[in-house]
Length: 190
Image (tube, rainbow, N blue to C red):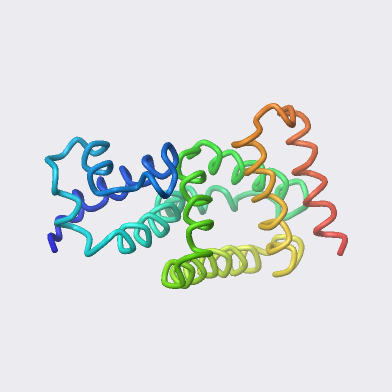
């Protein structure tokens, strides 16, 4: 297997785009090569098989969403109150929906994981690590609420993002803002 990290990342990014556009059934090495603009056979030199490519695409989505240290520190600046938590949740929803193809690819991967135990294990581990990271940051930052608050917001806002990306006319931007605020309020009241 080839190990050029930049080429590997570009191929995984191309796989994310293919998953978003064509679904899991459309994810082939040939489609990835074409999307990445590389010679045929390149992807097969970097990934042991399709399952390897699927697993790496699942991890790459989260890599691309992790804010850098400066952005993370800046996002935690200011008061540690309900209003700041609402603002952070709006920023998270915005950041994820801006990476539309990544989230749609993740949905494809999650559906595929129902049929592929190895992919399910990879996604479970990666999503659990992301949740744990968010819980730890939330608690260490002294934001209102507890670990359950973070988990409830994760569940509520993920479905809001699904609706925003798949049924964009279902809710207006102002309704989305109101729903984010309501989700924070309800998660904090529990």
